[in-house]
Image (tube, rainbow, N blue to C red; front, side, top):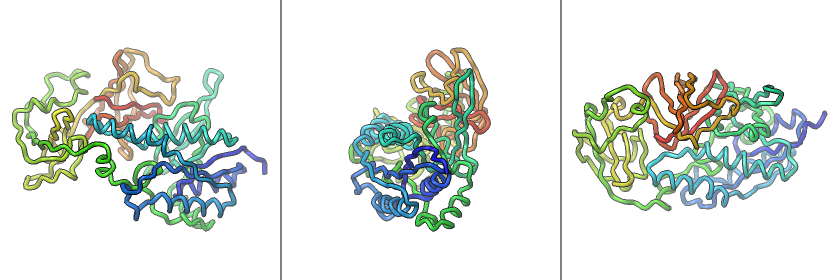
Length: 393
């Protein structure tokens, strides 16, 4: 069989990356498996659920079973600088970061990619449920990021910050498969990861106790939990212009507000959160509708339909607008309709992009629940992810 080149696979110890390595070997690639160790502090990991050492051993067994070289590389210093410090800074500002998106941009397809190229690799591969297509435009190759064939597992959102250069070196061997088929293949070839549970938690760290993780650097600070009534005047817009629709509600101006409890730090909470408030006795469950990390206040409202949980628009600052398809960048004053989402697994919803001098305004056809600054909005044309941006407001 003709050698198609060398591929370094990020073996995480899960079934998806395991089958990815197998399929690439079957296709004639020279496959090398690498496990990334990104974290040293096991005190914040729920060790029974996803300890890194078990994942590393599982990855080693997969490599031995497939007959491919394997090594563990420690990226913990770079991970701390690029992901963990970023998370702390964002939470401290009252924003909600998405470390998985950053992990793909900054670790898997940057420092991991660089290491792979040092090892003579032509490509890197991961077990993401997404697909890549090549097209030609204006005499040069362009790469399209396509949703995974399994609608329930599509992970294109997590790759929404990748560039054309990063995509040119990326392979997604299982993107055309259903999850059930991936497990079936793993069982057929006797992989030890065939029936292993999917991991949940920070990228290549494991399931983390987030409050404990945050408290390592963000110290507890007692403050008030303030409830705002659903019918407060702040939730009614005076007009329907774009800039008004994207501005978060000025919660401190609410008239019908009352203190209902205390918290240990506004920076531990995010919009839409229900658990961890520790306040009972209300007719309906309380949800966080906003935080103020300057005055250390957590604002809450009763019920899943509280007006404070919903907004119709958001703003991405110009510096944070990213186009995977950089040939489609918008000019100031331009307007386009696409589909999009503001979180993983959310159904795609119709939206309008409006490029202004200060950034990209995103207006949804229907109000969206839990728009949180620091998260990512991604927009699609059909099943192709075109671009994304960090939500500013």
